[in-house]
Amino acid sequence: MILALMGSLAGCSRQAQAVDSDEVVFDSQTFRVVSVDLERESLSLHWKDPENGQAYGDIETLRQWGLAHDRRLLFAANAGIYDRQLAPLGLYVENGKTLVPLNLVRGNPAAGNFSIQPNGVFAIYPDGHAAVRPSSTFKVDGKGAQWATQSGPMLLIDGQINDQFVDDSASLKWRSGVCAKAPKKVVFAVSEAPVNFHTFARLFRDELGCRDALYLDGTISQFYVDGDGYAGAPTFMVKPYAGIFAVFTSDKP
Image (cartoon, rainbow, N blue to C red; front, side, top):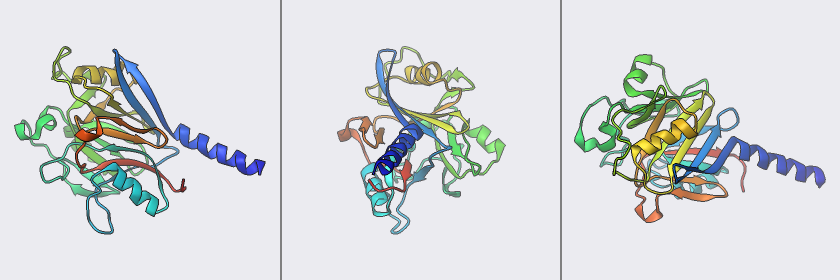
């Protein structure tokens, strides 16, 4: 019995370290920051249920799908900006298959934040390492991704804040973003109250130690962390998602 209990505690400790969730106060604003250790857990993308072709649409539906397949959801977040047809607006790669191609259209006002240059790609490659790249750089690199989402704008490019951002901007929204702090360490952040782009970019640079970071989405952004529940925008503001990041475990609760 003691050995079984010790094994159970070791399993909980392993999961806690592989998906680490913290509340961070930066510049008098509160953020939920989630770090994923890709050496220990798999980060994947999910848009449609492969059994019926229907979009999951929300995190709870994806969580229930996981339970039905003996997989517990440890972490989930909306994966980026999408169009009016509820399809990803830019590149979307799921398990090595490109479902939406790279979108290099520039300056389209209908694309909202996606049109703020440069936009970018968050990708996980077949060897398991992750990276954030401006979309044009990602195209030049020509490397096939195992999982990828295109969103925008880039928050940080090589340690520099996107020069499109204004430090005292009055454009305040809930915001979510992602960076690859190291090849096998991915860091997500979502604001718990509306912030501007400049503050959000500084969070990634000055508090989280990232050099390249990508904006994911705004007012509808939420994170789910097993044991902590939801963080980010109020639930009444959340609309259906086109893509969802997820970390599952194969163990039932």
